[in-house]
Length: 397
Length: 166
Image (cartoon, rainbow over all chains, first blue to last red; front, side):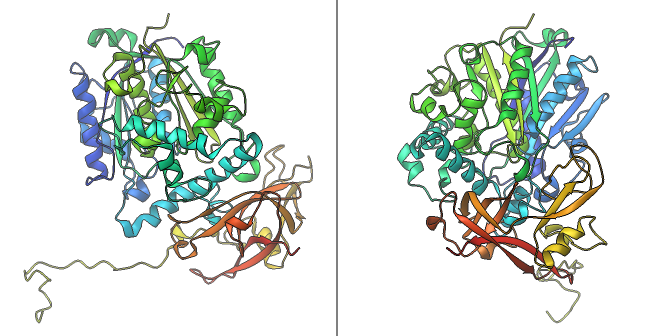
């Protein structure tokens, strides 16, 4: 890439079951974002990238990028679009904003991720209907194969093939939800134990309710700038050092490469590591926000992001290597398990967390010691696509 | 309210009426419209209606697809033929859904859903007449074909599986 690109600030709406509309969430996150970067205002934004997955179903609204521009007073004069990549839509928006700046199309971009997922309780089956159709609706969704039973089968296969245990999976949730208890915007605000996870409602065995991320309303924003522009407004940024994605011509069950491994994650990570000059990710990365939509996901990600041998992900959490003071601090934000997963907002929030970890603005209880490098990861749909981005506190050469 | 121009609040405002309920619309119907007027893989559904599960195979490169296609994703040929799939398979993975069902399936909860290997194809399917606790990976399962009733007048079918008779 020709130009360095930095995240110079960002902000969150409060996440949870919100008494607020889709448009309210956008405005809350937009204000928090601009408040965080006093020297950048809506009129400075040249490109707007909005991550949002199903506003047509959840908020009965389409063409949402211009709605964000209007609500936040952004006069776009270069690029504007919404990105849809299911659970990775926020990172997709961030990736396009990065590319637009790196390639010289523009200097200042706003990335905003938003999802309003909680409908009145009697309509939640509509939400679930939409979530079920991330695979082929005609042949997979039709079987009621929404996320919990699908990832339950991933867990079942990983346990079957690698002897991963029920308790190892529960440790992921106990860790991440306990981080979220110290994160003011997070949906879930209570520390929990391994026993709490195992004893929770057995929603889709072997997964229990606390193995699953919640249905959450939320929004988050980021401001990205070229290095030249960033220097005018701040001394501190999270520099994007690498970004990769992979999809292996597959989305429905028959065509997935595996139900216990995600080689797409390995490919996406290798792209990002190579761009960032990372040879030994576990030694060189300090903090990571990975896609723990379900507890089993984080365990597979330890393996397929190249941090530990295949099949040893369960042991990795059991040995405490992903704790804040471990080999790599994983999901200090609280992850999707603790923060909730408002689909389009998640990747945006993960990147903001890495920046906040770099600048030391998170609560002390969940601060990783002096991080210099970070990673965000999202999977989407049936985990058929994986997206990885690396970030650094120091400006790349 | 004797005066029909009055609303429930007793004001003179006009009342805009919207329906209390809407019948399950096509946009929320999981099952495809299966006839020739709506899909170019209608032969798959015709075969299923006749009692045979099939899929497409490329006559040029031999690639076996599932779901059925009209163009081979391996060589871009559109010369595909329908081939029979076995009606017995094995359970590769399974779980059950005990809450949070999609619209139209709320009354089915709890239900078992699984991944089944049949021949060289792996597909997801509902596993009927089975309890989660009674199943194991590798269990034999057999095809059953079900009729789909509503919300269209079309005669629609779909495949499910059930534990094989031992």
